[in-house]
Image (cartoon, rainbow, N blue to C red; front, side, top):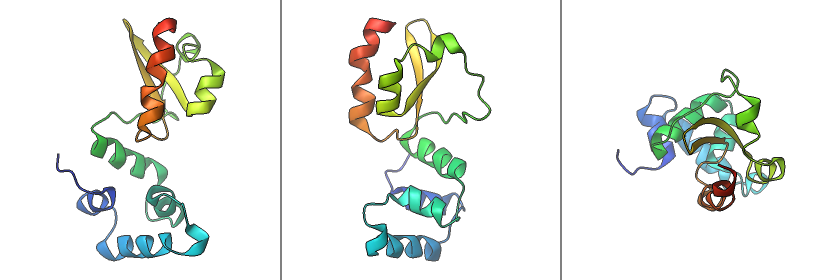
Amino acid sequence: MKNIPIGEHLIEKGLVTQEQLNEVLAAQKEEKNKGKKLGDLIVEMKLVTENQFAEVLAERLNISFIDLDSAELQPDIIKKIPEDKARKYNCIAVNKVGRRLTVATDNPSDFYAMESPSRWLQVLL
């Protein structure tokens, strides 16, 4: 996959136009939107749904997308991540195969958060 910005990927997928992306980028520069991520703003502006953006982001990052609204979560798997860690990193365990735990998060590009759990999860698995 090409290493292109997520906005360009949204255009390639036909979810937004170049003009719409330009509007979002301009809005991002406004004082009231300082610090807002492109994904949050593009959803807030109702150009795409949260799931649409998450699916495109997952594809862009070459990771799986999990819709937690339709996923069958198992309490014994969820408990693999202590509640304080799940809240801190905004993640949830969704599947376990052998020693491999699949974790869902709303921010897969937070590399520190994704690296950090490996330190405390090894003890739990």
